[in-house]
Image (cartoon, rainbow, N blue to C red; front, side, top):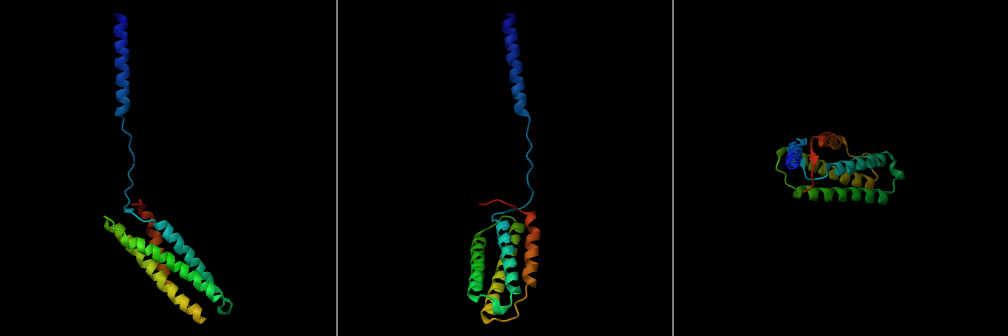
Length: 155
């Protein structure tokens, strides 16, 4: 009889300890940042790469520029931007701030494409003056500064 009572007590103790283990909740911290469904980091990394290459191009004297190679490179930048623009225009976000950020990146890409077009014209004409980068760099700085305010979750 004592054995049965001891066995029941052991089983009861084990069951209570197992139930107690399952009752402890694990808290997972929720990221409060708004969600964006596009990879803004990649877009901005490409934008920075474009900026560096275009600045290098603008520092080369026009008589030394390989026009065909420079134009092909610039057209490649524009093709990348167009692909990003197509992707971004199709995306919808539930949160207004996420949509605002998407629109800021769209504005940046459109501005960069306009700058690329002007640069292609300047390179082709072997003009010394180049288009102003002020608005482009301002937009880039605004978009880059805000990227940490969002978390990327692909759809």
